[in-house]
Length: 202
Image (spheres, rainbow, N blue to C red):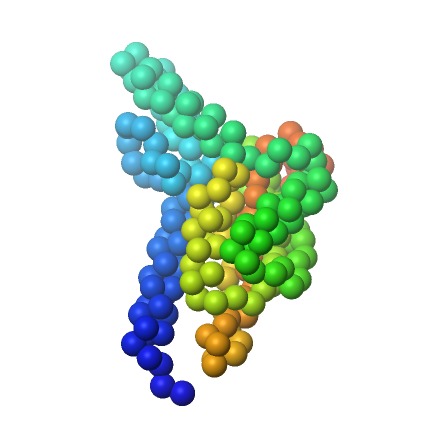
């Protein structure tokens, strides 16, 4: 069945949004190479840690860099305020399921299936808590859901998105999506000796 102009426009919007979202997520968890100034709002925990360490080294050599050090510390503190509230990984998994379920419900999308990925070290100080969800939705609902994931108070990152057409006559999509939240390493001491895993294994 030929796509109407409105359908083509909606799919183009989805493709652009997915591409932008992927870029944002890549930027979120890759070290930034920038110098001074306030950290961009998209900086992730690992990038902010590295920026703080660089600012500390500069502050030791240049007293004038103390302002940059303070700015980096504030940026990291703001990011840490968005970490999961749970006291341990098991509770964090339950928190993730609740958070993602509420975001889907807000878009009128039923959660069809969910499973927990393996909790692993994301960086020297933080732990990744992944959740895999499956649902069926429309194009607009998916775009709105991804925007909600990026903008909600907790720090979440999308690590895997698989989209397949479901019912072309009603323009629905089957979606499998992996989303990760984060905990400080001290709340998961059993992982302290584990190696850092830069790639999620689901």
